[in-house]
Length: 88
Image 1 (cartoon, rainbow, N blue to C red):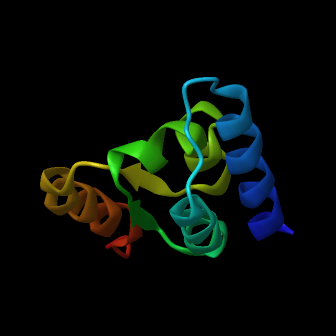
Image 2: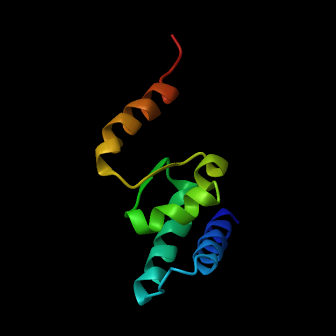
């Protein structure tokens, strides 16, 4: 299941990072990211939650744009629209 793959990748990535201090909010992040990454075209996260999915190449594997900078969103939406525009 794709959502389980994301959950495992996040947990694994965060456990490998010795500098990562776990908090109760990390569980909320994992619960939110697990269905979002495989089933959304664009996912915007905070910077702390962006690294693990990028390292696991989840965006490429699941064809999802993973952003942490909200200023990139308009450009990413334009690119997304261009890829889905019907051919004339």
